[in-house]
Length: 198
Image (cartoon, rainbow, N blue to C red; front, side, top):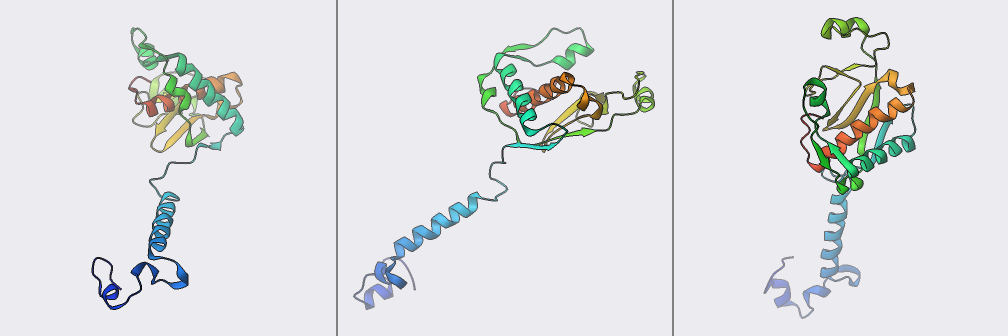
């Protein structure tokens, strides 16, 4: 069968083309059904579709705990943003403070992996940095492109992940503060801020 103006089928038969379909369904209905089915199938399971919101939680804390920390990060950034806390630690530099960004309240995690990593040993930390700490050190190696060699935690944005030194997991409010800072980094990244000194 061919479609288009002046087809052979249309010229040889008195029945209009739109009625030549099984079970009384018009060709227009079939085309619309096929097109909608393809659109709907294309939206689900595609690598281009938006990621599912939430966490891949590999912590001792509940998803509700992580969501509460995320909400704290959103609220903090909606009030005020410090773009250079790492630079302030290493140099005599003033804080690069910006007004809060209300868009932070709309950013949600999308399959953000949150997991502990074993603390680096005091011997390894001392050999690499000259810094002496008792065990557990509360520090983990921070892979490139981190600005520091060792940190309490770090985040990457592709894929989305946050890792922290496992000794902080049972350290009460310190755990919340560390994760809130890392969650702020995820939010700032989504909003397009310069992350060089975060």
